[in-house]
Length: 201
Image (cartoon, rainbow, N blue to C red; front, top):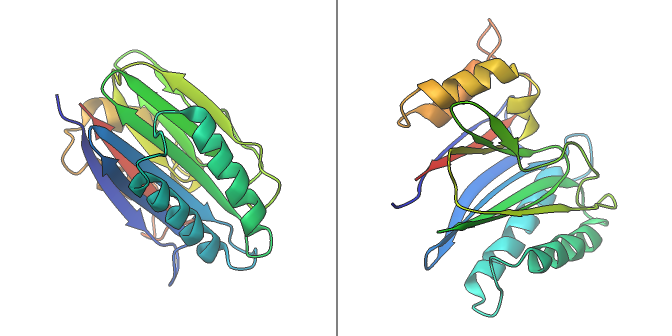
């Protein structure tokens, strides 16, 4: 069954520091989110440069998209290159039939949500790229639930129970937008930028 992915982004102010996109090579989809650090010089530029690195990797046939070590090396190189520019969180989830590779740095997250449980592919906050990052990687089998990859604007400002309820109960169409709407305050404003990707087979 084909992988379907939806994306939603929303700024808290005039300019968002958050990024989300999907790249593909053959049967492998690469889901990426990044959150340029607000208050740190050129956080948005740092997120953009990380996306450029991912895009180049996807276009390079010699780069094994399903090798965690290759992504760890890419994260390490990005951490060094960004130290003079800014800081950003980053999550990469490379997904192909039968395998998922997740590499993360910072407090953006990736979850697989099933009817009765949730698997957190990212292990909580760590240093951002550009700030001495120590990326974490996880390799697992087939996607057997709904995957959500998002910045902390979602996970910090929406209760876990509400996130899980939406992912378990809502039809896929409009799901990414619904997650962002759940983060809005009574005034309709957002407390933080949000970038969300959701995927299922």
